[in-house]
Structure formats: structure tokens, C-alpha cells
Length: 275
Image 1 (cartoon, rainbow, N blue to C red):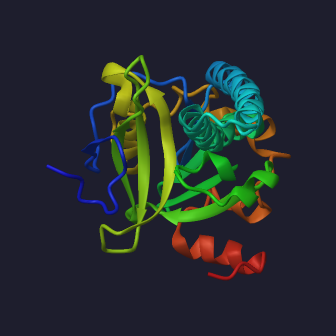
Image 2 (cartoon, rainbow, N blue to C red; image 1 turned 30 degrees about the horizontal axis):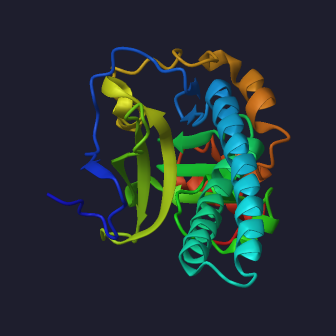
């Protein structure tokens, strides 16, 4: 049975239901939680460094391959041309360029990810906040001109009601899965954006983050607010290490702790933020 969200993403496995789950343990990606909001990182430092190294090595090998194939094409074009080898070499050059086009975003997102790219969920206002590398976004085709803007970021506020979870297979050798939040037009299944929630997970933990967030937003007693990297009383330390100086707008930092939509509206009005 296909996904109900359109367009369906390549590698789709399952749509995820919303609602509380029975959560028995914490997760290394939970940074901080209080009665108003919780914060999850989406890349651990170890994964970020590993994938940065792998993507860098891949890029270097591809650049070397492109140089070699280009020189080979030039040599094959001298009379008498070997049409068979020339066609094969041109095809290899084309595939190398496509592959490098797909790997550059992976390289950029790991090189320029800030502190694990935390995502904030406020359960009082049911708003979600992201401040992430443009290349962290789940896209397949990109404008090549964007590669000239490696530090470009996107900072957005979403309604929780418009976010819906799915799991996709990343087709790696380790059979990892990725949890993605589909941003849909209100009241529809038409996807207008994607948010990477849990990039690489295996086995039973593949939907743990999704389950914890749903339980938190539903005020489930199964979540322990002190199970994150920082205790509930350590909000200042969390902010100092993960929020301050990372490009978060001041109004968003205040909105994390907004206790109602009216309070959120007042914060936006104070900072001149238009809906």
C-alpha cells in the first residue's frame, strides 16, 4: 500500500501515525526538555565526522575520475577516433558529474551543520522551529547555483498539525532507515516541504525519536523530561551551548517557551514579525 503523502518519496517504507507512545528509555539525540518545549539534534558529532570524511573521499575520487575521463575523451577524439570507447567515456563522464552533483549536498550538510542542527518542538503552541543548513533539507534535485552558497541556511516555523512522519530506506549497506517529516498543505496530503528528523537509524530504534516527540506533545506520562543531555534545570547551559550564537532569531528563542498562541503573537508583534 503506497504512502498517502504525495509526491511519494523514493525508498518509502511506512507512514507514521501521530499520538502518544509508551516510551521506556531516552535517546542520545534528546538534548533538552522542559514543560514547554523539547530539543533534538539530528546529527551526532560522530556521524557528522564519519559522513563528512566519506563524502570528502568520494568527491576527491570523483574529481580524479572526471579529470582522467576528460583526458581520455580528448585522446580518443584524435584521428582515427574509436567511436565505441568514445561513447563509453562520455557516458562515464556524464555519470561522474551526476554522482558528484548528488554528493556535494551530503558534503556541505556535514561540513556546515551547526551543533547537530537541533529542532525545537513547543507543545504549548504546537509550533516547530528549525535553523538548518539549506543542504540538510531532503531534496533530490537542486539548482546547481546553490552550490555556490555553501553556508546558506533556512530558518522556519511550522505548525505541528501540518507535519507528518514517514520512514524511508536509505539503501546503505547497513540497511539504515531515515525518518522524515512531510510538510503538507493544511488539511491535505500534498507535500510542500520536507524536514529531516532522524537521518540514520537501524532496527528497533528507527522511529524512537518520532515516538518520543509525539508522547511529549501529547503530555504523555511515559516521557521523562530529565532524560536529555541537559536536565530541565539546565536550560541556560543548553542555550549557551546549542542556541546562542548559532543564528537563531531572537523572537524564536523567546517563542521556544511561549505558553500559548496569544503569548506567541505578542512575541512576534514585539519583534515586528508578520505572519
